[in-house]
Each structure stands twice: as structure tokens, then as C-alpha cells.
Figure 1 (cartoon, rainbow, N blue to C red):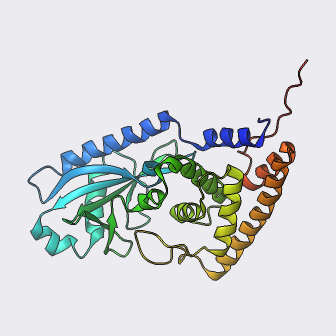
Figure 2 (figure 1 turned 180 degrees about the vertical axis):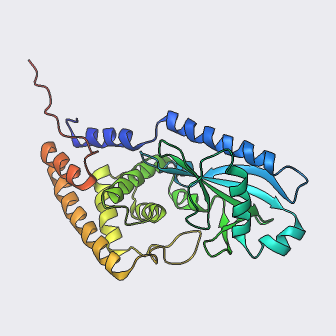
Figure 3 (figure 1 turned 135 degrees about the vertical axis):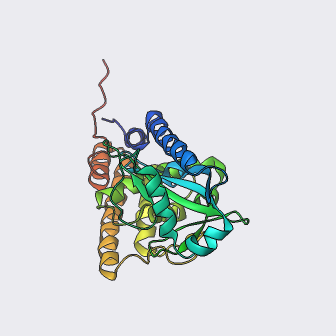
Length: 295
């Protein structure tokens, strides 16, 4: 419950932000996985375990509750002979080696793609284990669904945050979390990182949360084809024309409600503003509470 729109957004951010206990749980699970892999791929073997690194939205502080999965990159060194003979042309073979290592000690989700091995837990917070190799240039090669390798840079997906002043990044990650929650209310039609890029591109430091979301909805409606500052190409290419049309309609509806909500807030009508934000952001958004009267 909140007595003002600003207070409602502050509470909303607390609801969405993963608590320290959740982050500790993720680190603990990743450590358990790393210990197993380090034993099964020791120094001197054809495949050597080197290190692990949490990446994705958890590492960028843009994940929202509940967290359904966290991404773990596993750096493996493959000897030149096996690499040239087997793994260079078939990333799925390396993925299978990792699956074989983990299957005796962990509950693995049935294979559903060629990019990661998913370690499943009863509480629904899973770890996607993504094995890969590192090049001298600093780039990573990680599996593709096709069995080929895709090139990635370990810090590449954080660059869109670094385009903004350091002082504004806390506010930006908050707006990204809000945008991701809206996307969840829309059945996650947009990919998570696509939402991040859209929110980052539309963000202007110093805006109130409501104004920043209004900007996000308006920008995204007309600019779904936002580029990734690391990987070239249209980040909306996974969307069919009919999906684009449906998403743009929902973005326009959200923008229209946001305009009305921001107008109401500016004129002191927090009850109306909060009610509209509840419609936009879903039931997790705090409800309005009448301020206590003095006396």
C-alpha cells in the first residue's frame, strides 16, 4: 500500500529486486556446479575446467523476482587435438560432456536446445550452465542450437548500461526491472535482453519512474528494431509480423495509460495514478492507501 505514486514505485522496486538471500542461493548453486565440473575436467585432461562466471540479467542487476533461472558460463580449455578433431565442428559434443558430468549429482532438465545444460531445482530457480572456450582476443565461443559456435564477449551485454553516466545506472536498472515486469504481464512476448536494450535506449537521466516508463512505451512502439551495441543486427528479428503488430498495440495502450497516470500524479491525484499503474504493471504494483488524517 502506498500514499503517493513515488512511494508506490519505490515499494514496487523492492518487490521486484532479488533479495540478498536469493543472490546467495544462486552463488551457492553455481559453486556446487563448479566443484563438480572441476573434478570431472581436471588439469591435464583433454578438456580442462578453468573458471565459472555468472552472466546475464543476474550479473547486470536487471533480474526481477521471481527468478526462474540464472546463467552460468563455464570456461573450459580444450586440447588442440580434440578441438580440431571433434569439438570445433560440433559444440553439442562439448555440451554433452558437461551434461554427462552433471547428471549423476544434479537433476537435469531434458535437453531442449543446444546452448546450455539446465540444472533443475524443486523451487523453480534453475541454473543454465553454458560451457564455452575463450580466445586470446578475450572473446568467448559458446554453443549455438545448430551445433556451431557463436562468439560472445564476457562484458559485451553490459555495454548498454555503460553508455549512461555511472551516477544514472542505478536508476536505469530500476527502470529496466519495471519494463521487464510489464513484459511479464504481456506473457513475455519480448526477450529479456531485448527489453533491456529498449529501456536503455529510451532512458533519460533524471526522469521520474512514470515518465521513464512512458518514454519506454513510446520509444519501443516505434523502435522495436533497436540494435545491440555488441552484436550487430536487428534484435527484434525473432518476432513475426503478427507478433510485432500485437506488441505495438499493447505498447500504445500502455503508453496511453502512462500519459494519463503521469498527468494525474502531476495534479496530485495519486489514487487515479496508482490505479492506472496497477492496470499497466499488474497486481504486483502496490495499491493506493489514503494518507492518515492528522488530529
